[in-house]
Image (tube, rainbow, N blue to C red; front, top):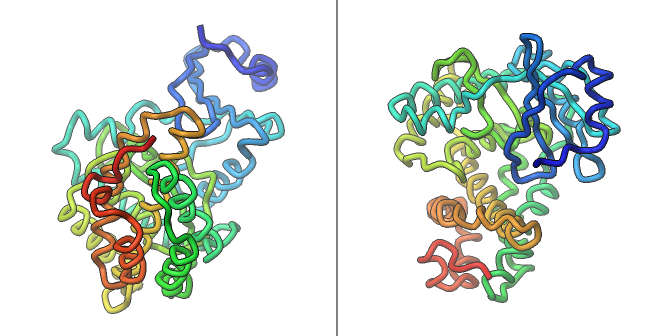
Length: 333
């Protein structure tokens, strides 16, 4: 039997849902837990994001911003952020990932809707969020040397790693393509297809870590998905769909360094994810994430082939044994 968090029934009574049936849902990589509520012809989602590990106020703030901009975040029915409770609209069961697993022929329609939704978001005024700056990028990418390298049993040049990343990220943080809201985890498992069709409006979830940063970051998250294979040629086509839509809206991404910056963000995100997935396995007892590392490693290697990544590519050549690279990151102990 699933143990329900302390305070759940008190919160539901305050929210007017005391008689609802409670159905716990599978967890994710965080400390958050989700429950589906049903009763009297209505349904809702209940999120428990307990402090100090989580901050539900951030979710509420971003949801409010997205709603103000006409984007499709779940409506908030009731909240007690100090206790970690948020009662929100239930977007149903049609996650983009699950939909495409069952209907692979809908891939182009679903991804086109997702990149067009990003283009729309990037045309809005940025939210009142912290900047995705050099310190944030470096803090994230250090997860690779802090967690993956020890788990793989290798010693690496950490100072050289940071110096290489600082060099390649400088054009990103000074890019004219900064200044949009970045949801930071925009991929097929965090997009809900509303209305039961692949081209339906995109329901957004898991956006509580939003920052203001580069327009390429969420595209990388979507098109270089750690959890789902996306053909490289198809990803390039969707990138062009995004650029065409931005050009239609008055922003030209063709005669700039956007593609190199996109690759740099891809490498940064993928190196970070290798570190995060290793940490989830070693620290948090979630070994299932290790099976995804080879996919992420393949994406990382492809990004390192871009000229913009040359300093980081040289570091990998000098520090990561060829056998580990060829095996998709090797075995994590």
